[in-house]
Image (cartoon, rainbow, N blue to C red; front, side):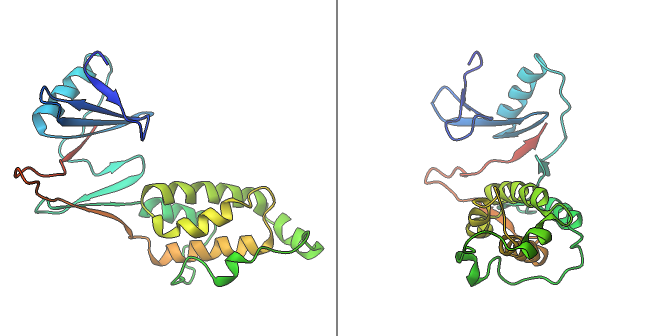
Length: 212
């Protein structure tokens, strides 16, 4: 507040600075020990100087290429920005020993909407206990929810359904989870793309992103 930054209503880790004309000239994202700035270079440099007066920070020269595990790709002409999390997906597959599994073309089967009837059978109980699948299920769902929120909205339906069964997942849920992972295996490079557009006043609607 002392330096005219306001906290975003959408994300408490994002702070926004406006110039004297009331226009946004710098956006500052802070998460634990990782930070990122977006805006014109003069405004970014001013913010970095302000932060250095309070904290010991390491500035990464040039445009940001990663933030909280999200890969940031800038096109050569500066017109597009792509966000992806291939490294996190690779780690997820590795933890389940699925680095070389066959990929699936879809994240969920039709049976995903058909929950099991009644309690688990003895065979299902033994299946879920083997390899501590209950704990792995919860852990994998946590990672998938993070992926969904950041760069992979295409798996939102499947992950949203599976996340409702973390209390006591059935064999059916485990197999559905594996289907999501197989889908990610074949779409690791998928992500979000932002296109720079010109405003009516000739200014760009997107700004370069810089790392801290």
